[in-house]
Image (cartoon, rainbow, N blue to C red; front, side, top):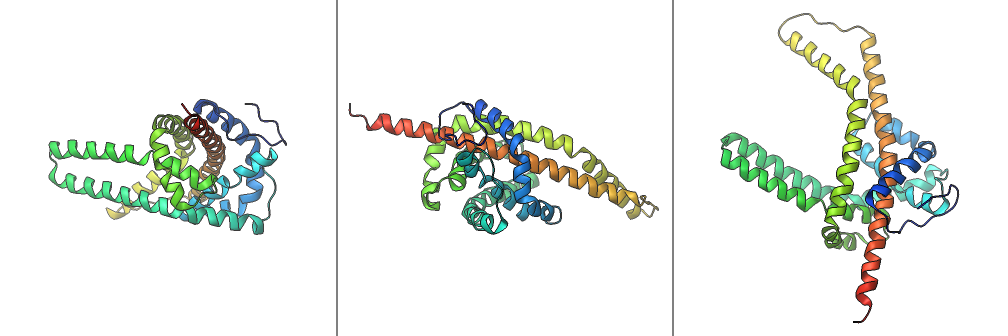
Length: 267
């Protein structure tokens, strides 16, 4: 599929997950400037308030994707027009966030309890349960995409879990490949920040031992600049990620429509 700039295109079209990633990276790079013009205030706020704003920023980027498919580019939108749509999408994501937190809490609690016993059998059981949890969560990625991009109710989006199970291999392959690429880029971009955090840790250890440890005044300026760079790279990655995810949502949606059409044909 070739996407022509400034012309609408069909999202719900069958394509490979590799093609979704390739197209997403290509067109995300073209549109990152337009996305920035819409969301730079949220980006600035994200420098000072991390998790909730970062989650909202990711959702706000995602809701721009339908505009991209309708117009062939990401239009300039006023915050007054964009805020209600982004906030509605953010609220739709909260139940799924609750499920993720609940599952993560169970895993951490089990990890802590097994760590107290240090039994090899218990660790083996924990590994098996963690694997089952992972398999359980993968189809929720499809629920997430439905919450973001479809007009279905939250209840019906969660009912789409079975569609996620049916497309488990596609979801796993897509997020494995894209996730590895994202982690590599973020790891490289975060090196200066991680090094500086390690320096601060050593300073705190030295002070706790009664030693005098001072850092130069410009260290904090460099620390702030490293944080800005890491956050900017994360923003860029989020834009590329959203483009790829949107195309992938269209890919599975088209595949499911084709499947339903075949099932409706009388034998």
